[in-house]
Image: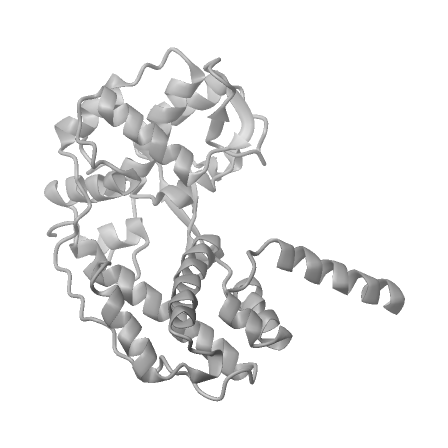
Amino acid sequence: MADDESRDLPAIRTELVSALPAPPALIGRAGPRAAKRFFEFFAANIRNRNTRQAYHRALVDFFAWCDDRNFGLLEIEPIVVAAYIEYLATIYSVPTVKQHLAAIRMCFDWLVVGQIVPMNPASSVRGPTHVVKRGKTPVLTAEEARRLLDSIDIVTAVGLRDRALIAAMIYSFARVSAVVGMRVEDYYQFGKRSWLRLHEKGGKFHEVPAHHSAEEYLDAYILAGGIADDAKGPLFRTAAGRSGELSANGMTRQDVLRMVKRRAQAAGLSERICCHTFRATGITAYLENGGTIENAQAIAAHESPRTTKLYDRTGDEITLDEIERILI
């Protein structure tokens, strides 16, 4: 048994490492222990795939910048990190700069714990101040949202899918990643109502009652797509070529964004519309029709009411009455 396990461990390690890009040259020159620890930072320390990709890009850029200036791993000091952050501030937005600094801090923390470097040069570096009181996400009016939904040709299963997907994001304030992560069984009946089980960040589930319009659109889509019996299959599926039919594969966030851009253009709406627009649109419509910040925060699964307030103005349990305030 022990022999079998010892044979499996190198295979597991090889599989994990092969799934990640090569380490930056600066890390590679620091030796195999540093390279292994760098890989482990992503494989073991960061569970969210999107965060992993964003942090990897940030760290590759940082170590390339240091390499171009002939800094070795042990020669990176706080003043080097500070200079890099000043450089980033000239080319990126403040939130992007703060994300890059967070990636650098976390990576060096991991390297310190692994005894690769003696101290974290980024721990004392302050990022730029960023105060936001109003979100920049483009928001549709109720009339524009209705025009978009009504403009979708629902003759095919793909058209029904697109309408149902957009409605799910609007009426449940859902992130696109939470929606594309849903399986057929995550749209379910409880009592007399239908519910949505959203796959949120960190492996959490967030359950929201389905608005009657979302329920109507999802029922029509599932019936036309013939996917009701595939409980473990993805709820929102890619198209099978140009047939208008569905494949067995789930949509990605990029698939949804392309669809949204295409549908928005066909409806004569702004090209700035993105997937997050529907989350902002639903929250704004809810608040404008008497909903409260507290309940909007609960429906959207925001950690802080400050985030919810970015979507406009103004704790009870989420009820169908609260969901039905989204008058679109």
